[in-house]
Length: 205
Length: 196
Image (cartoon, one colour):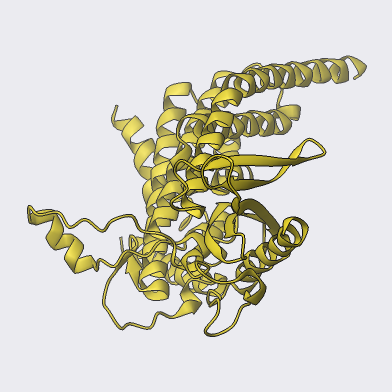
């Protein structure tokens, strides 16, 4: 009996030990690549939330060693043109992380959802991109030689934020239209942007 | 060879994980909202079933039966985590599209069921075919369910609009719609297999 318990524990320990060592090595092998991918995505997002920012200087504002937001300068030695920050808030099933660009008067230049794990088909629609092709057109497109280019499509939900003032942001008709069946996720995006945006505007204006 | 092929085929129809065994319905409900999601989940799950089947059948003679369950759980969880990390590092777009589905596979009872019911009692080669068949059956079922749900609930197929000016029935995208669709499909499958 006692002998068995010892044997079982030993086998379990062995299995776990092998599994853990494999995981540790995979984690360390993939870690730099994962970080690189994340950084590349962040840089791409930066361009999307602050269009025409090519050549602008970005300066991270640090607080307690963490990046709070980025100041965007137009050209060398000039005034602050705007801010880029990351807003976070818990939605329905995950923390929704949004990168936001604002001008220094508080109008939004663009937003992009960086991370979310909301319900597929409902909350996840905050990042949905709608193709204006219909099924019939797409089928025809396979057989015809000309390819219709649709250009770069952006999610319709986040596009609504462009050009709006941060103070007047709210979920309502004629302002930001919530996604049907996903009010909580939509609300999380709007509120997180409003809170963090007002905080940043208030501090640096 | 014919026998191996049979192991593969049984997963698709006679022992289809969703329609016949009714396993893994929880992730099926959550994921079958669009064809892309359903297919992605199916492929990821197939990969994990295959991997865990291979390892479980390879070490089946070393593991005492009394502690087999914790061992299987560790193997499956390790596999899922490796898949997730590798996908994040080398296929960031795929990992973004699949999002939460990959970690969800850990709780998918098909993987556990195949390890327990099949791989722990059969050879590695047989287990490979069983894993592939179960994965294919699961993927097929998911694509079928999500196709119906996407068409009625969102008015699209593969993200493309079917008919303009169609007001989709949101019910189909929500969980009750999934239960309806799965129930009706199980009924049809049962009817078909009774006729034979």
